[in-house]
Length: 226
Image 1: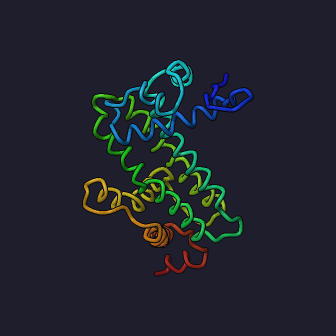
Image 2 (image 1 turned 45 degrees about the vertical axis):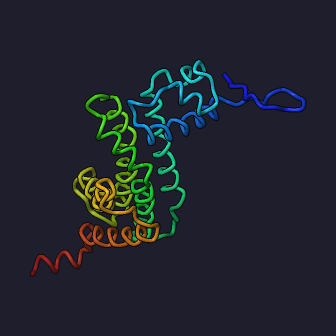
Image 3 (image 1 turned 180 degrees about the horizontal axis):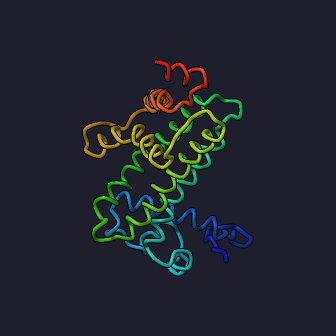
């Protein structure tokens, strides 16, 4: 199915927009309105108007408002996953690789729009449990999967040794984003700059790897004798 874009043209037929493109436009409009108005106050008809589509088209692509919110969360996680994977250099050492992953995570999580979504979820989760469900499924589990995948890959190469990947992944994510995110949410701090995010990623990577680097046989035997 397609959406016809109505534009003033001197001649020719209106350009036809694909469903994927229309979904993207609608999702961007929904993201803006959710951030500005909150979930409860956002009207689907207003989202359709902001996106320049009919409500019929919107409901065909997103049967419920919760589907729109889930799409907003999914879009951010897809960009995070893509950037986290494409920016990795095959020859990079483990520290450099982890810094890149954490830096991408920090830029996503500490972005003002992402923090606004998180505040929306916390505020409206009791009235709209579907919002909390969508955020948990798409955002929290989505980022967890990427981080845990990185840890698993490095465990397989023998570079690090971790007994509980899920637990360690949660600790790593929390170390990177929790404190600065909380400061911004409580209006006590400004969002960190890109340079501050990079510096925090460097520090967190160093601390984390010091605790889980796989020990060589010689060092393990030396500790045993000690």
